[in-house]
Amino acid sequence: MQVADVHKELGGWAHDLARELWPFPRSLTGHGVRQTLDVLQRELPDLSRHAVPTGYHAFDWEVPREWNLKRAWIETPQGQVICDTDVHNLHVVGYSTPGDRKLPLEELAPRLHSEPDQPNAIPYVTSYYADYWGFCLSEDQRRRLPPGEYRAVIDATLAPGQLDFADLIVPGETDREVLFSTYLCHPSMANNELSGIVVASALARLVSQMPRRKYTYRFVFLPETLGSLVYLSTRLDHLRAKVDAGFVLTCVGDEGPFSYLASPSESTLADRIAIRALEASGVAFERYSYLERGSDERQYCAPGIELPVCSVMKSKYGTFPEYHTSLDDLEFVTPRGLSESIAMYHSMITDLETTPRPRLRTLGEPQLGRRGLYQTLSRKGSAADSMLMRNVLAYSDGRTDLEGIAAKLGVSVNEVSDIVDMLVTHELLTP
Image (tube, rainbow, N blue to C red; front, side, top):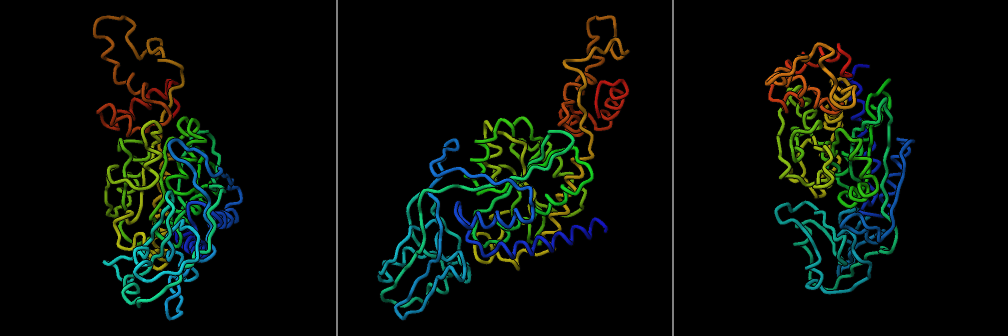
């Protein structure tokens, strides 16, 4: 099967998987997250499940109580049921406190959320860290509400529990790692939520089927923000020591143009791989700086953590009108959009596996003189003649590619390549 056909087939598989995951009432914690992980574990049998309890401290954050929703709805004065979460998960404010309340429309109205500029859309609203209850509905529906007494029912529990997450480690020939992170805390939103989950799953299948892998690949599925902080709090030393490149997978399922969100330095291996793949594809793409961040790159790239992480998306979060509303559905996300993202990331993985990243074979600076690479007569200025060669050696850490070394030294890639070839011949570098 041609590679393009593989991507197309995986795009269809990913869309089917998104359709299966669509109904689950995901949130920061709870049964919906576990249901989602159950399905992912069926598709990825080597997936490892983890959890931390309510009250767990992840740096400056604390895991809140676990929220589990059975059903929420409003009954109008005429006995009509509206804002029913059995119809759409977004009808209730996430983490709403339980209750069965009767109140007039004028008291209920401040707790009803809609989008005046999008009269047909149900907005996504949450209140994870402060007790609150409320409902979401379209502006059109809100305007038609008659006066009178309403019944607002939120059948849910909010009690000590746990925050669930998972990872899949696909080992390679080395312990150097590539990180893919995506999140599973948004209910019934296809691009902002499910596209990242299913594209990560598709990439995990592709990587697992590779006949040989230089890198070890780490696929992480967790609640956004708090989940990544929890994950980092339990594995920070390992990730800082081992991860050479990382990517946050989100908003990768629509048919809009590609978007690239840079790391803070804009020069990590992940950045270079992303730009090379996007430019080689010949497609138009939008560039965004780290100042326009909004997903888990905020945690992975934070001061003191500083992992080499960036993002390649289709339509960037917050830039499309469907974002964080019921309009972000399985028609907005398509098999074609998913397959295009799978293909782009597959090309990035191929680049990671095949692009040379030389590594120095000695501990400390090698002795160049006995190999005829340095003047044996030391005199004023003699070191300058070999400075470029020694600088190439200094940055040959096994993680930086030729393009990165060239950029650091302010010379051409061809110059670096010629020096690397010579140093490999003298057995000073492993290509």
